[in-house]
Structures are given as C-alpha cells and as structure tokens.
Amino acid sequence: MTIIELIKKIFLIEILQGLSVTFKHWISPSVTRQYPKEKRVPFPGSRGLHALVRNPVTGNAKCVGCGLCAAMCPSECIYIYTSEGDDNKKVVDRYEIEVLRCVFCGLCVEACPYGALSLTDHFEYSDYTREAFYYTKEMLLENWDKYMSGDKGLEYLDKFWRPRTVDFPVPVIEPKKEEEVAK
Ligand code: SF4
Ligand code: SF4
Image 1 (cartoon, protein in one colour):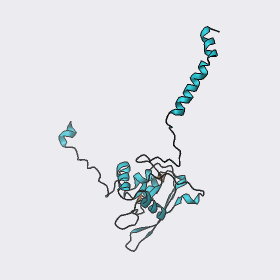
Image 2 (cartoon, rainbow, N blue to C red):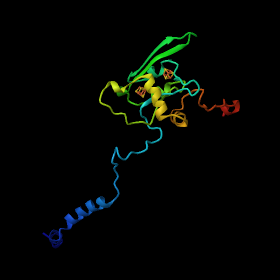
Image 3 (cartoon, rainbow, N blue to C red):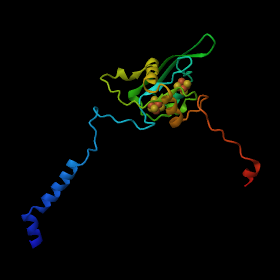
Image 4 (cartoon, helix red, strand yellow):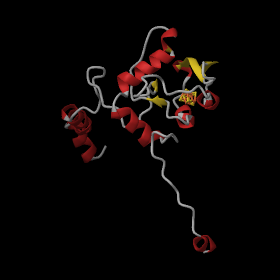
C-alpha cells in the first residue's frame, strides 16, 4: 500500500467524495414533480384524448360520416354508423372511438378533409373499466367543449395538423412560370 492510499483510507477520502455527490443532489432543486399535485402544462400539439369538432354555427358535429378517418386508422378503433337523411344527405348516427386501442398516431386527424376530428392535449383520463374508454359521439363532442373550446382548438388544428378544410387557410402554391421550369 502506498502512502497516498494509506492517507485516503485513514481520512475516508473516497467515502467523503461519494457523500459529496449525495449532498450536492440533496440541496439542488428537484427535477421531478409531485404528480398529481404538481401538474405540468402539456407541450403544444401533444396528443391526448380525441374530440369531435363542434360546428360553432349549428352546434352539431362537423363530421359528415365520410369514413376516411376509420379507413386510415391502423388500430381499426373508429366505428362510424350512418343513415340517409331527408335531403339524401348522410347522417352520422353513431361515431365511436375505442380509445384503449388507439396508438395516438394522429392519422385520423390528418385524414379528415373537414377538420372535424381532433386530438386534444388532455391526457388524464384513467378509469377502472374498459367500457369507460369507449367514447361515443356525444362524449367526443363534450371533449371538444371541455378541452378545445374557443380559439384553442382551431389553433391546435391549424398549427399542428393543418387539415385541408375550408375552415383553415391552405397555402396557395402558384404554378411555375415557363421560363422557371426551363431552368
Ligand atoms: S390516433 Fe391513430 S390509432 Fe388513434 S384513432 Fe386516430 S388513427 Fe386510430
Ligand atoms: S374523416 Fe372527418 S368527416 Fe369523415 S368520418 Fe372521419 S371525422 Fe367525420
């Protein structure tokens, strides 16, 4: 054993070095949160519970029952039941999402040509039964009112999903002039 090793042993240098790391972290600010007492604001565009967009004029769902969202869904967890209305227009009788099977890919929102479906930033929806995660049309509309009402929902859709719908401006790409194409 060298002199230096002996001194280290006598004065417990290595133990003190280890403890200094412990004390440093003990007095430094915590990097964890005491959830659920301390909640964090979700990041913009985070993918939480679904919502059906409510038409601010009619108060009904904007969904027309085209079925594109269900066709795109990789989890096949969107169920749409339609019938024919008086004016030969499709009526959405039932629109349901089995949230427990959803992988929150957002393809359904991207696919919707009417901006009628959205994800929200609400992520606290734990429950005790499987049935509680079977969201009906009414529940999905309620989600829009609760979590996306006002400008919040429109901003979320416009900023993060850019659905190609009449409600949101889609950038117009001017066709290239002949001389630019020739270059
Ligand atoms: S987010 Fe993805 S998995 Fe979930 S319902 Fe939409 S398309 Fe299906
Ligand atoms: S794609 Fe949009 S409009 Fe079509 S069924 Fe789905 S939510 Fe409704």
